[in-house]
Image 1: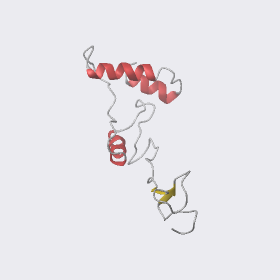
Image 2: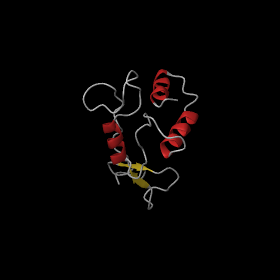
Image 3: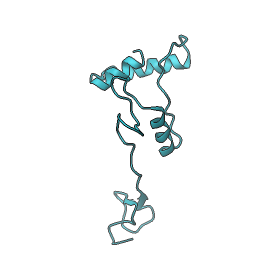
Image 4: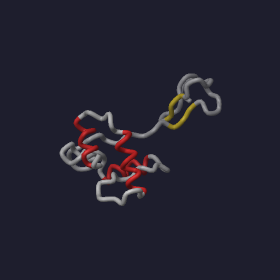
Length: 112
């Protein structure tokens, strides 16, 4: 530790714990995904392309968050009552209030 109130480099203080006690410092999360829609290494699609994440962006997110269940949008034709149809229905219900440009594009891509 550097001082009584701070943690090692790359670690953050846990609020509500006493300095120096076990569990008072946790490893800080690394850099987040770049929120870019242009250029090489982009993680998100542009509004014209239907918003949402790129395949590479989903891969990077899964690597950073092990155990996540992030998957690609349901964009094709699906059988009624199938797992994909239920997932689409759930997304459409959740995203009804998305009135912004990106939200509308994402809903259109999912065929809501």
